[in-house]
Structures are given as C-alpha cells and as structure tokens.
Image (cartoon, rainbow, N blue to C red):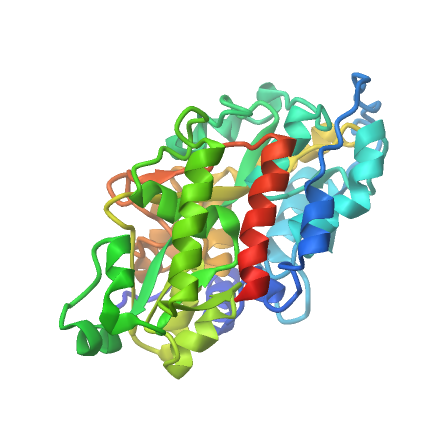
Length: 411
C-alpha cells in the first residue's frame, strides 16, 4: 500500500497532476514525420567551421534573465500553464526564465539554428537541450561554451553513468537534463499466452516465431540498431568495434526481420497504441513511456526489461551556445535542477531517468511508490548493461542514417 503524500500543497498538487499527465515529450513527436529521408539526411550533413568561435560577452551580472529552448511536455506544469519549479528558481535567484518549447525534433531544430551556431551568433536561446548525439555534434564543432564548474557546485551530483562520454568525458560542455533508457516493453499476459514464458530475457526472445507479426521497434536508429548491435557482441561505445561493416551487418539483420514479417511496426512513441490495442505484444521502447502505459492501464500491465546483452542509454543535454549572453544565469539554472529536491519534482512529472544522485531519496518524501520505480530511479545493477551509442563522423552519420531510413520508408 502506498504511503500518504507529504503535506506540502505544491508537492501534492504537482504529483496529482503528474499522475493525470498521460504524455511525454516523445509522445509529441509521434507522427511528426521524423522518418522522412530527405529531411533526416539534410540535417545529418556536417557543418563545422574552420574558424574558432569566441563566446559572446556575458551580461548576467546586469541582466537577470535567460531564454531556454526545450521539448514539449518536459517541465512540471500547473493547470494554469505556469511552471512551479521555474517560479521557485526565479524566487530564489531573481533570474527570470523565458521557457520556450522550440525543439520538436533534433534534426529540424538543428536546421533552424545551425547557421547561427556556425557563426557563433545568438540562436535566440541561452540554453537548449538537444539529445546527446546532436549535442556531441555541437561540442565537436565548437558551437558551445565551456561551463564554469565553480558556478555549478551541484554538478557533483551527476550520476556516474553519464560521465565518460567520448565527446565530453568530464561534462565540461554539457550536462544531462533527463536520461533516456531503451529496452523491451511487453504485455505480461499476452506474452505468456503466446510464448508460454513469463517474460522475455533477451533480445533474441523477440524473434520467437510465436511473436511473428506482433513485434514493434522504435524508429530511432541508435536505440533499435543499438540493441541489435549489442546482441551481436558489438561495443557501441567503441569506434574499433562499432565499424561501418558492423553497423551494416546489423542493418541486414534488421531488414531480414522486417522483410519476413517478424517485425510488424516501426514507430516513434505511437508504438504504445499498438501495445494497447493488441497489435503488438512486445516492442523496443523507452522506459518513461512504460511508466505512462501502466499509469494509463491503472495496473502493472506491462513489463520492461534490459536485455542480457545490454541496451542503450542517452540523455537530452543542457548546452550553452557560443552566442548566449547569459552564461552565468544558465549555470545557476543548471545548478538549481541538480539539487536533488528539485530534480525529484521534475522526475515525478516527466517520468524519465533522473541523472541526479540523491533525487531518489528526495522523491521518497514526495511519493514512496514513485521513488521505487526502477524506470525512473534505476539502481546501478539495473543499468549496468546500458551503453551510450558512440559519436559518429559526418560521413558515418550520412551512411548509417541513409541505410536505416531506407528500411523505414520501405516497411
């Protein structure tokens, strides 16, 4: 039985709204046409500059404001449309935040801001949260400012799993906003009826003939092909292991499963509709969406597991573009959300993996049942086999995306 919520009016209301909240920021992308080959490949083209960019002058001391570009449905929000945690930040620091939902897709957002990024000019935001693979492009091309760790003392709370990224090993240029964990979501009853097993244990279980035509996968290349690569023994973090040949072998395997009908659906977040109506029994999925599926069902109808061979983990990252003029203010914002108490409020709303150590303990004070959910607060044991897909060169990005998108368009 769940313990009662703490008697803090704001906390109580936020959690009630989070329980009613049936969409994630990925839901908003469903059906957005992110699989269109021409758009995807156009945005994959490398756009580096031969000129080293210079950070804009920081006016934070005289202008207590900042502009934040983020994804939809990715911030705690009251019924009146306000953002309680941002209001708390402003009350504590005096810094006003203009929070703008501008990122609908990594590629399309990059298409809007890349010219300014390349020139080190203002993109209209002091901070933005692209997904890790896109953020790595920004870092590698010199588009973002180095953060001053002295202004972010709560950086010490970043979970170890998010350190060691090839493009930013010490998180000097980026810090995770929310973690994105992939794995397998399955209908517990339907899976047992079809296969006779209580639960899948490996990626290979998706290829059980009993599931033919009832399997879904994500249209996100790094997650779907990443899981296949890991199952084939490829280290997706290492360029010597994840070569073009290894990737294309995984593509061939994937295409075979699509062509023979084992994989019936390749979708974004709308894969949840197929699970709900029974068209699919199991799917490569995102952890936050599994939480929402069970909330919608009112029971633990769906299970989620990480394959024995490993799975992918990524994040949407705080980045400060070279043209940003409120760097110190942004660092205070990041420091605020790396306070475990504030991170817990955010995690309760968005239902993705919090990158902040100590947030779980704070969440216990809000809702013990929420804090026990491994999909939001995974233990080290739970995510020990989660790996980040390595950064790709511009040439690799074009070749890999083209091969993957051709299968999606032909499916």
